[in-house]
Amino acid sequence: MNATTRSRTTGLAATFEDERYAWARRRAVRRRAVSVEAALVGFLVGVPLVSTMSALSGLVPVVLWVAACLAFIPVHSVVNLGVRGVFDRREATLDEVQRSMRDTAAAAVTRYRDVLGLLAFVAAALVTWRGGGMGSGLAVGFALWFTSGLLSTWYLAWTLPDEED
Image (cartoon, rainbow, N blue to C red; front, side, top):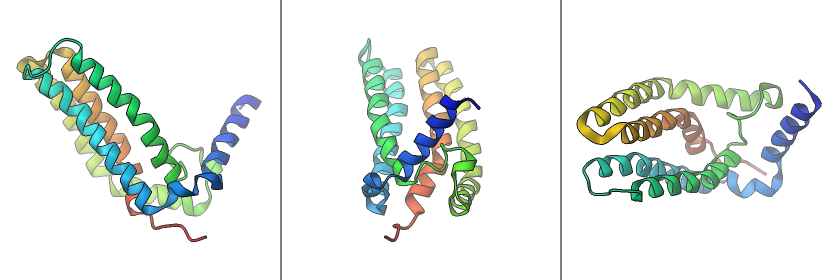
């Protein structure tokens, strides 16, 4: 590992541990952020489906989809700060409690993640096959696949108790 990677990794761990972001670690904040993220992902799935039914046409669905993707970024940052980034950090930067939380959350959603990943593939194929076009099929499939990767973080953010001071 070179010096740049080492310092960036250390900086990332320091950001997640920074007390300036303690507000994001409150259960109510984490749950709101997860709810908003889930709504955005639902929107990312819904826009191509609605455009497949010809309710939206032209660039409108593309603009809506990109806008939802951009709105997702700061919301996911709040969720990540709330769980101290345990899914995004290197193993060496986590303590035993954080490793345990991460592993427990990942194990709790493994089946759901697998089913959602399969559903993403099937949904992409069905949307494309039913006349939605390759773009709509890929958008639906990507959003569902992306959601499968978020399940562990969402589970941890939703179930993690408030931290004691």
